[in-house]
Length: 319
Ligand code: SF4
Ligand code: SF4
Image (cartoon, rainbow, N blue to C red; front, side, top):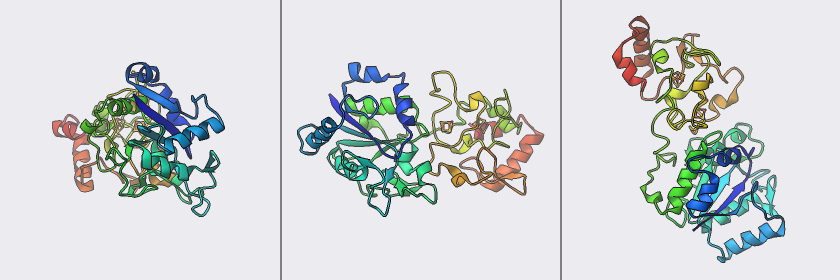
């Protein structure tokens, strides 16, 4: 039996909505088949008021063991590092987070706001939001770069806006069944099992990418990289392999990948003209090219690919 406490800070509840749609396994199966005991969750917990305060007190005094502390939303530190913009159970939420993270066996951050600050942390960041152990790409965040939970791991980050529900439930199962030691995390604390391949892996439009055939919103065929800012070639996530609702993904539905599982999200700080638009030099060359490519090589190869569209080497690099 693994006790899970889920709290929310600067959040829209999107990750909760996603979590409740999990299919492999479902949230019900977490409880009935995988030994997860949800101590409390802001949307599905039955306790209110003092019942929640008493539960938190019992966790803090050791009467109830906290196996997994799940946090959704940014850590709100404003104003002036007091955290009083976000009160919960009679004190700033950030004080609860600090103390609960110190007694938890494992701490898991769900969604971009909890992992790296997300949209609330975009300048001028009036709520002084940060992520649990990162602020954008910089390690540290609220708990500090050296934080490790009692179980010996740093914050396990499951990013996304929202995170795919199966990423969440499968990591909870790995912890509950004692197999989290098998899960390797990357430099941004993301489980590599979900965040090694790029979104482009499995995308149905790869051939169009190689052949530089432009696509548009909602249109069948064509690649969304050239005009509408698809970040699939530089975003690590399994969205085109572990499909959403088991049958689709953004790019399959004709919507560009926004790069939501990378710590720079939202990219270009949501500057006017940067959203759902490919940023270019001289109106021609994409400012960002697929990860692992030098810009010069990409431009040369893309030009060759345009002339010889069946170039197998280009197909290989786009996988
Ligand atoms: S750039 Fe986007 S739409 Fe084009 S192939 Fe890659 S993931 Fe698919
Ligand atoms: S396709 Fe891109 S923007 Fe959409 S959920 Fe996956 S990583 Fe995020």
